Length: 333
Ligand code: AHG
Ligand code: MN
Ligand code: MN
Image (cartoon, rainbow, N blue to C red; front, side, top):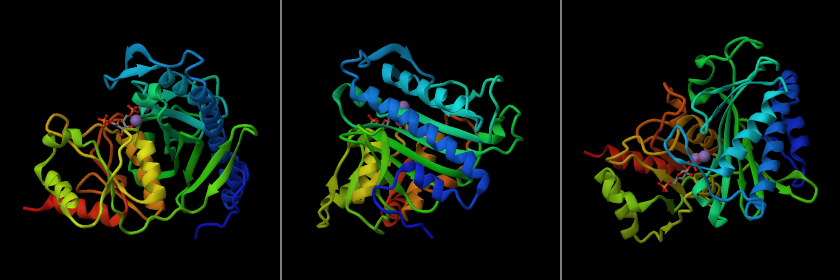
């Protein structure tokens, strides 16, 4: 059962109340979440001033994924790692921007949790002031605290996550969080510097009629998916298309208003573009907590077992009947 909270409850109080039943989490998971919120506030402030602070544009480097790295990608990656390294509750940060997982330096205590993070999602939207965000998923380690984290701690089923969330830097800054029971959103009051509860226990209807996909690639999709999308457009169900090009922003809109987000594989990239550990897993955890579904076309995203920390996956995520419809369409003879 999800707990009831009044709008305006601070994120700190929410974390305190929801971790009360687990005393060990009250000290550790609560600290971890507070540090994530702190780094989120730093990034939010930097995003708002990006045009003034010389933070727009690319660094000239490419990351391990071969994508152009933006200055804010680096700022955000550093902000989250610095916030998490010294507090004694984290043992590794698996980031989109780092080739290898960042293991907590020896001078700090190697704590209980692993954070998988896309520090800045939608970075091609930075220079045009469109919504971008941070996505994170949290695992509790299998190996003992105080030792160096290993692959066993982060290459595991999405069902092992203990919490996940995202922070969007849009017309307002919003942090969405789930510890498995309901999804709660907190809006940052930038004058006070605090996140306040603004959306309680979000629930998705079984079905919606908005779809979010980059149709520019349709010629390279599985023809069965093309047939499905053409079918809904030809139907009399008044389907709407919405695509920002920041997964986190498209997902947030669909979570609030209903809708399905698709990033399928293509002929060139059968596994699509999105990363399992720090994009698909955390959002799949949230969507299930809100009564929705996430699939790679044949299997629930959370049931997948990663073999590589930068592994990609096709992603179909949103209201549960919409996801099932797509699975059915893809499995037709
Ligand atoms: P990132 O900026 O972290 O690399 O992620 C970008 C992703 C995702 O946010 C978005 O849904 C997708 O790229 C858009 O890709 P297309 O331009 O291929 O549609
Ligand atoms: Mn991303
Ligand atoms: Mn990114």
